[in-house]
Image (cartoon, rainbow, N blue to C red):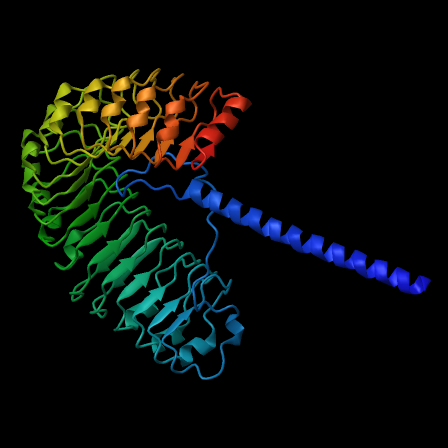
Length: 480
């Protein structure tokens, strides 16, 4: 009888412990789920393609998501592999291409990125049907000439290697459409793309290239990225690329543009930021297809008068230009949708800003403003306003006129209180007020039904005020 009783209590104890473990794991899983959702909410706050404002936890690494079909163990490549058309061996820590890969005579796509490959074996030339090869983030020191023997190649990606020079004739690759050799160590370059009549995209950014001969590019090229190199001169041959609509030459050593540059009548996106250009020709308006222009970080004191006639220009960036007064031509560009004049020495803006009636995005961060210019409240379509890192000490009650505002970034100012009139920002979803001197929030903010993120980190809020804010704005994600 005693044995039976002990067994009963033992079973009961085990059952209770099992129930406790079950609910503990369930609660833990729920907490982890909530935590991941919070991380996602903090990290994945995007504004627009043109402007990305301050958001929390930018340094937190995203949760890795493995691609479907990635081989877990390259040594298990066996069986009937001859008909394989697509293979990913990304991130397998391999130092050479597995021999079985060369049995895949029908292989079309091959991803060998994120490995430790230093060179390609000569057998690589047997993959005659290969159309796409990715060798990003390996340890290649030379451009693999084996690729030049694969006539069906359309896409070549070699970004993030250690290639120091590039001498190659791509004339056999007549179907080539895109080549990316960015983020290497290329200094000397001698290439030819003759007969590559389908080539559209070239990316050589993040190297040490001092001169690029545009004459070697076919007329079919539509996009060239030469960011972060050491280019000081653009040859006249650039004017031959009539189909080019994207050109980025940011962060180089350019001081001027050749007159042939203005023959790029199809150009829609141009980035000349972080160079040493002191003047732009009045012929700049001949780039009449231009939609986005970034000329920030140069030595420009003024803009060409003719730029006011560039009717297709919708995005203009002239940040970090050390200017105290904006060129008057800007206020005549009536079709502007986005204007970035951050990182200057501005204390005020002209009342002519009201002429930009279509403006939706305005970045005035990193300037010397002590208040939001009243003229901004006359921009009826404004959706994104960034005045972070200024010296603002208050927010005018006239902010109520910005009824279309979606994001408001006032991070790192001297603001000590918020006006009740902010309740009229009914479309606002994100308000960033970190690093100010705010002690409390007005009750009226509880009526901001669309607000989903409020950043109040590094303010003067008491614990009781934080709790009150959580109760009042229960559906909003807070950062304290």
